[in-house]
Image (cartoon, rainbow, N blue to C red; front, side):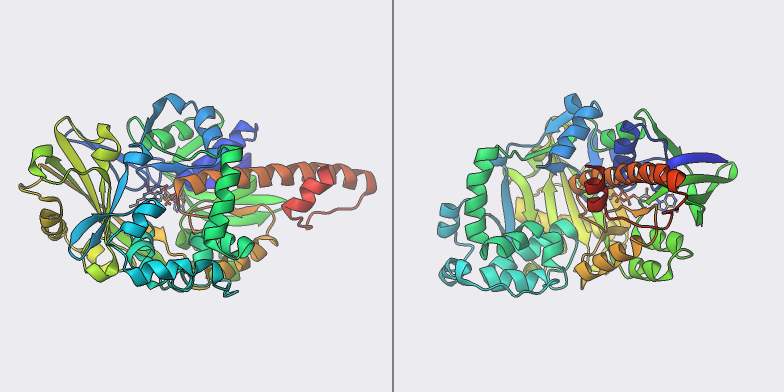
Length: 485
Ligand SMILES: Cc1cc2nc3c(=O)[nH]c(=O)nc-3n(C[C@H](O)[C@H](O)[C@H](O)COP(=O)(O)OP(=O)(O)OC[C@H]3O[C@@H](n4cnc5c(N)ncnc54)[C@H](O)[C@@H]3O)c2cc1C
């Protein structure tokens, strides 16, 4: 039976990122992916000269770990930059037409999107007290701090459009940790932003948004073929059993059953699959995982001749607030963002439907979905003809919903894991759904494992000397690094 340092179950970006960081440190790593190809939700497809993305279409990065991985994996020269931020207008569907969202304070004050009352309400923000609630919903957090209009016209469409979630149920601290942190540290979002602006200038924080030539699949392909990352597709993990100081894991593969043992197992699957795998080790942990809900989504890509659309399409696309009763949550102008997404003289528009706002819509049949998308787009962007390309992607478990007592659930999961040495849960229901967050969390779990292994070898030497075993002791990462210093 093969003996590995780390087995990773799930070959989406979470699993692949963890594998890349671990393999780079010289550990023996295998990644098991149930499907025939790595990448999980991420998949770029070329169709009739258009390049569509099934899930993530870009990385918005401000973290050094991400830059390091992109460079280290040899992907720097494959990066394609998004339309510069200054040219990237964001539109909002407002009273039946598209209005550019003001991105600067001056433009916001002058914007007709907000009433005078709404603007005056913003001025009160520094004087609002914290609620002190751990899992305050986005709707309450934003209304309390910034007023109802900001919720209605900015945050609700943002939460529905980018996370497929419901602002009334989503934990603010979980999905907008930076805003929640500003309130906690400075007592005000506005004051915190001012302070951070000054600090950011000093530390030269940079934010960039990019994809890759050939789309986001380039990232998962390169990671899955990186030295030391042993990718095994068609391996569906079925059983996870604690054995000695490690784990024995069985999979169904095209060649029959395969069993390996590993010191550490990273379960990088969606929560329901993770629940099934951990149930025999910890029923309560499985229960916590089963309680995480997912949004269903349909993604409709339409390819059109540029001259069939009257709108200049001079931005990233638009979001649709709940109150507008549009069938879409958002529409992205992919070929404006990345010109290589459509052939010359053509455009690619991608619409998102379903999510927590209207889950049943994601189940409509293809022609119903396409008809509704076109009926919505026609008056908004002056669409005159039918598309020459339509492609529809569907996700049954598109995105985990950070709904309800999310922070409390995550704390309970972390507490259970403290008692199961060598088991790690690493997927987009923990620590953020974005590709950036997945790469950063992969780095963190790899560091955790490396720290644990160093501590284990110190402990092994100690027990060899003293004859005392520390097998079942669990040390948090902070104590490990302190112990090593
Ligand atoms: C429509 C859409 C648009 C998005 N747009 C963006 C964007 O523009 N930018 C951005 O940063 N993020 C975006 N995201 C989010 C991002 O794409 C996802 O959060 C991320 O790709 C999820 O990666 P993951 O590895 O955690 O999960 P997954 O991609 O779901 O991977 C999990 C893998 O585990 C495998 N698996 C499950 N069970 C088993 C088993 N028993 N044995 C072996 N393998 C198993 C699955 O087959 C799957 O491949 C978007 C998401 C969606 C749905």
